[in-house]
Length: 179
Length: 446
Image (tube, rainbow over all chains, first blue to last red; front, side, top):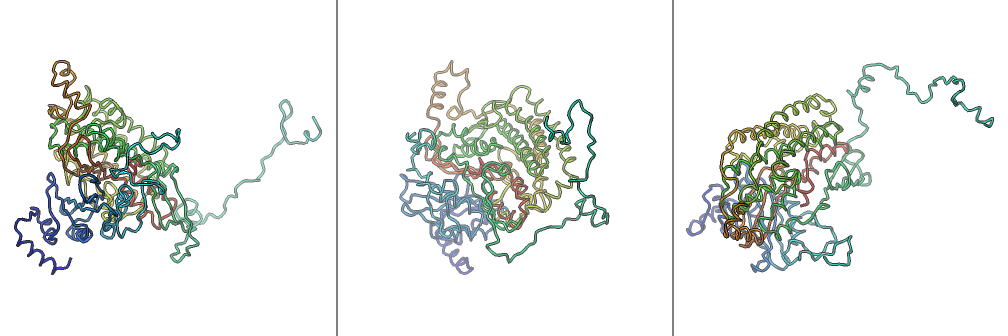
């Protein structure tokens, strides 16, 4: 984030008074830089609704604002509920401000892709691989986007809602039966 | 008996003993060189390493070594692909998933009250922390608050669980480095805590005792005696561990300066728990985001300095002492009252009421057939497990089952520290480093 854009966008944000902003100063400054990032209060926790294309940009701004740890990246499959099928969720933690922030973005039904956060926080390497493995979400720019929990030759992504439960043949015991 | 046999130099019972004089054959030559240098080498004060750091080594000189998943020192089914250059590890890649059982998928099939049986099997050394994180998440979605006695029981049990988990960490850490007696001692002391858990929850592991809405039962009669015995016994035993390890040159040589992680690396890689604190970062979720009323008790957060295996071991020992102090405070100040929330939509009615009240019977039936519905929403709740930040991301769409139940496993993220801690170190330090991170593969793979 350059200073110029930050200033300009803060002024623009000030012109639209109905946009809700968090009380916390750190978060307010962070959200002020991004006009198109929505703030929500989810049961007392701060949530940022980030557009897919600004995912990494917002993440690096958040890191610069003091969120030095990204504790977790995961996804939710809203198959029958929403047109944009996937939600990618990143939980951020600021140790210096004692603050948490949850970033949520959406990914489309066909070829769900979102920018990888590994360049921002190298620690999201494993969690992003898990989200890829479980949901098939492609993290653009990830250095090693391979399956992490399932076997390499596995078909499908198990945590998707259309991946049936109990439809996988058991491997060793009477394997012709579908259990 | 043939003539050949007679010539053999063997003594036959009943005959005269042959003169079998000892020979020098096979004996070690005793060094006559008793110069200071030679003595130092023999006593291990001076070590001539046979390895040389060579940064310009060819790719061809590197060797890939697979360690695990059946290796006994990988604490389960962890597999490491290690790129070796002589004795030096250049790169490491942890390969996981051998214990993956799809618990997050299973969690979507079970209703909210059954979920505890599922999550408790993730980190099997700290099952109560898993249950606590899950229960706190469900309670946040439900918008209920547990009674003070339930919160105190939760703190009591999770802190004892921290002790038992750290004891296993110390035990396995000792065993991996060669202090076999440490293994026996650690498991012996853990047994005392597990016996208390069995008396309280009915099971030694996988308790499903902390449930949404409170705990499953009140503490058993005589629990104070058991806890008092643990509080009295453990510090004495910890002192014995110190006697065993603190002045042990082998232990110190194999832990100090081994597997070093810096504070910057730890935060960048999302490493939490004792591994993060060993680097000097004063961060404990019990202080930063207190849960279950733990802010009422006084305790300190032990912080390390060097981020090596020794600091991690030391922090675990100190944390056991702090946890015992919390347990003692809970024991002295435990409030009276109900051990679960008085909301018949969430907690089952007492057994006696079912026989008298039709309403209680209906509630009981509904709770155990379809469970309770949780308002739509999403939340993330984290607790400080013995391994670090154990979080539960729970999404509900208003049904009786979670729409999504994700666990942020501390071992999973902490495993990313392994390539950093092991880079450019010796192969022999591998097991010490793995053990000091204390990964639980059930937690990693879920």
